Length: 298
Image 1 (cartoon, rainbow, N blue to C red):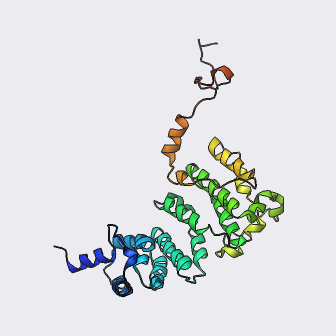
Image 2 (image 1 turned 180 degrees about the vertical axis):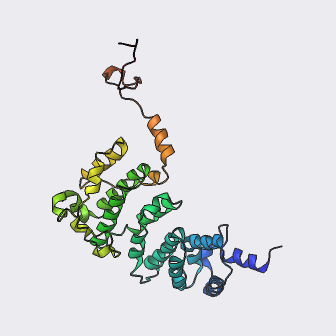
Image 3 (image 1 turned 60 degrees about the vertical axis):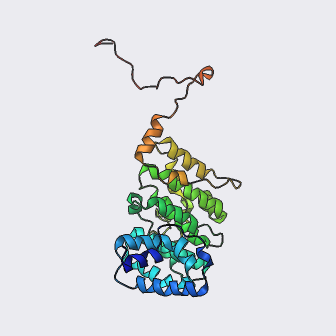
C-alpha cells in the first residue's frame, strides 16, 4: 500500500505519461497549483526528487498548471542554491516561462554565461547543457554583443578543453555565426586589430555578457586550432574560418556524447589513403618513419 505522501508525489510528478493532461478543467489546474506549491515549500524534497521535479517542469508540470508563473520563485531559488547540474535545469524552466508566459527575468543570460567554465567539460551534464544552450541562443532577436560574448567565451575555452570536445565547441560557434551573421566580423577581423598592447580587448572577467567587448575582438583562438595536430579538429577550425554566407547549420547532436574512447576507435578505423589511383578500394600499409634494419651495421 502506498502512503499518502507517495500518492501525492505520484499525482504531482507522475513517472508515466498521462493522456489529455492539457484538457484538465481550470478548477483542476488551480487545485494542482495549490498542492504543487505547498509541496515545493515543504521539507520533503530530497536530491533525487528535486532533480526529477526540475526535469519535469518544462514538459509535464507547466502544461498542468493554471498559472505557471507561480514556479518563478522556486526556479530562481533552485539556481541560487543547487549544484551546476540543477542550475541548468532551473534555467530551462525559467526559459519556458520567459518564452511562453512572458516572465521578465533580465539576469537569465548572465547566469547562463557564468556556467561556461572549464569544469563544465568534466561534468556528467555536459551534453544536456549544450543541448539546452543551443535552444537558448536560437532567437534572432538576441543582442549582437550577447551572442559575440558566448562565441568568444567558447572560443577561449576551446584552447583549454579536452580534445574530444573541441570539435563540438567549434561546430557550436559555427552554428552561432550562421544563425547570427552580424558576429561574422569576428572571423574577418585581423588579430592585430583586436589586440591593444598585446592584450585581447575581450574582457574575460566581466560577468555581464553585454559588456565584454567581445564583438570588438576576433576568433584568433579558432585560427590557432587550424594548426592542431588532430586532423578532425584542424578541419573543423578551417571550416569555420572559411565560412561562407550561404552555409547551413551543422548538427551538433552526434558530437555531444563523444569521448576519448570513441575518438580513438574512430581513428583506428580511419581508412588509409593510397597514393595509387588504381587501388582506391584497397587499403595500403600505414607509412612509418623508419626502415626495418637487417643487420647491426646496415
